[in-house]
Length: 108
Image 1 (tube, rainbow, N blue to C red):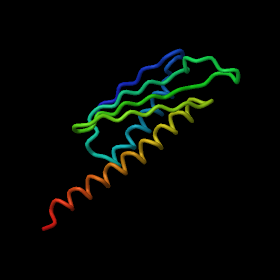
Image 2: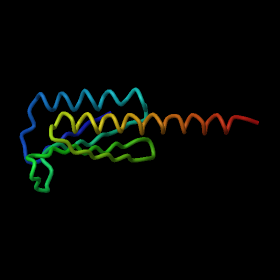
Image 3: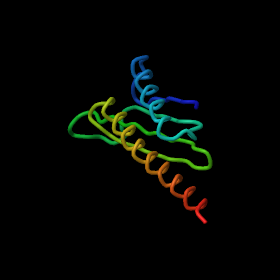
Image 4: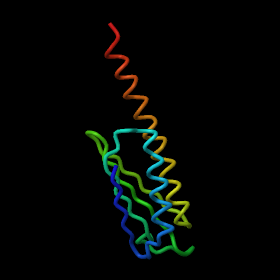
């Protein structure tokens, strides 16, 4: 699996890069068909009265499919965690559907 990390409106520190990589790599246990992941972190484009809003966008290329997830939060690490949590659920559900489909095909 390859991971491409980009940033917008902020500096990509080694700590942020390492945190993103750890969270994305942890998704592999939920779906082994992940081939490539594009991650974009940074400040959201829209102006907010409550201060800075951070955004994390992830595009995952699976075998024969693409998944996208985007989440905002007042803290960058929370935005990354939200994306990872939602992707974990989606990947787990997809894995279960695929297993059910395989079992259904093998029944007489």
